[in-house]
Image (cartoon, rainbow over all chains, first blue to last red; front, side, top):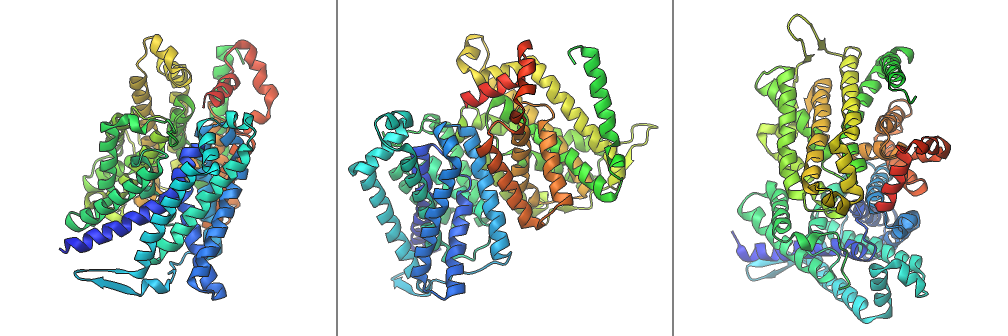
Length: 289
Length: 334
């Protein structure tokens, strides 16, 4: 086995996990919303990018932009629908409603795009880079760089800008934020739009690696939420580290032990974390601290 | 209504009318198929109902309990040649074992951590079922024999849907009775107190974690029993049992009518399955309908359709045992 190659693969997959999770991390930290429709939003992002390329003949970068824009719109729609539940912090109903939202998205995508698997063809997927014993595609390199940029940008925005301060304030106490004269629903709108845009961006960058199906949302979301939970709920830096760690773990476990049971193994990791550090996973959305 | 005997008579009349429902609806195969499906999926939903309405948590692993019951029935009858009763015992034991393990893991988690972990558990169960040859792998297990619950001289067998109806209906009635008794039992009251006011529960000397685990076990058994019957009805089990569709069906069924209403999940499931049978829009269209219904109910009337009739719910409030009070309190708490 080529250890160096597996490490490279792990780093790439890890950045993919982290990028897919980043929107959810912010959503969970700021609005305490567990979005079970996240995987279906990922699927929609990938299919919109594919559709833009297949139907209009636009190049791949334009498809990425289209997917991100539509993702942001989808996020904004979600915010409009869930506003009442978000403001009243009815967490149980919020979780269920996102499941229903995902189910509706999957049904709509099936009607719109059909049951056949498709390929989101990125020109960068065909270009490969060989460095000594390892190789990767240009698409992979773009993915890693984009992930680092998104995480750095989000972290800076949260801790250094006025907008970030407003988001952290909403996370702490929505009612107090409203008393302070800020429009809470606007801030939520921004957070939800970011979630939608971020997951669509991730989908447009990650999906060229594998065929896409309208039913793939369910599988996609699993690793994402392990990343979110292991990273410490709502922690931006934690998500990045957790994504990278799980990427390396799955690459090495898949190569050394058994690819079929990788998901189960990651779950075992999650259990270990829960048993060893239950406090870190308790329901206290504290990403701002 | 207040007199217990009157209540009993009313329940018996309702039960009898329910049993004759397929005949009243014309008795076609489609009617029988739909009603059998409603009975089984409603029974499955009650497992989740107990967790959602009484503990106030969202378990996303109940598809796995349902599948556990079905897989246990399939393996015991097909691979080992046991009868249906043994299969039922096996289904219950397997679900209890799984619930014990999951319960121990999730005991200390609340809210979304609980939901996330149960969701992951469901995915892992599916992962294991589709890769482990003992469980049929991705092909599933085919050739489950017709249901045979004969005891001594009493012959109880069922092949097709019309013969299956009495069994599915009996399962539903037993489930309803169990949930009804549970809500009035010491455990049910304790569960509600742990949900509503954990500190008060602790001061009353209740062990919250223990009660949560007991309710979790009960709910697993309910869903597994439904899965057991479903395996015989379909004569096949496969990884599609873990499909999110079942999960969303259960959740929508429970949410649609309103929480902590005994007949709520049954009515919710019935509405959804009637649409699927008699006004189907194809597999994707049905998914869309299911999702939209769930989102619409929660966004427009989070306390379920029953909350649209405030008068009926406020009338018994005077006697102090109204579901409305508890429902309102649970929304506030959550």
